Amino acid sequence: MRIDKYLKVARILKRRQVAKELADADRLMVNGRKVKAAYEVKVDDEITIVFGHRELKVKVLDIKEHIKKEDSATLYMIIDDKKGVE
Image 1: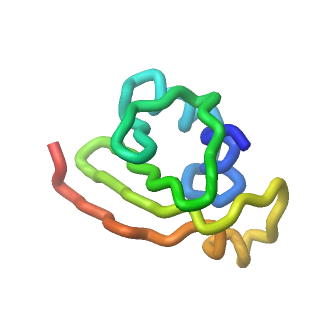
Image 2: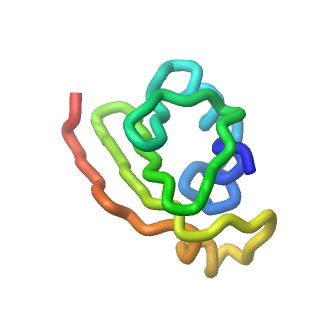
């Protein structure tokens, strides 16, 4: 699954367009490497998202095309959530 779609399905981001814009601005990384919105996510990937002064790092636990809102948090685990990053 593409990373932009994964972030939306997992409800980490609200819209795929936001994920695409973050990737285009080099603010989306997987395993320490900058990626494009078309990157294929794999289980155990570590995704780092930088938005504004916040950096969110999550680990992919599972990949599903469709999932209920209340179960979406089972797709990933938050590793780090830094606020105030520049």
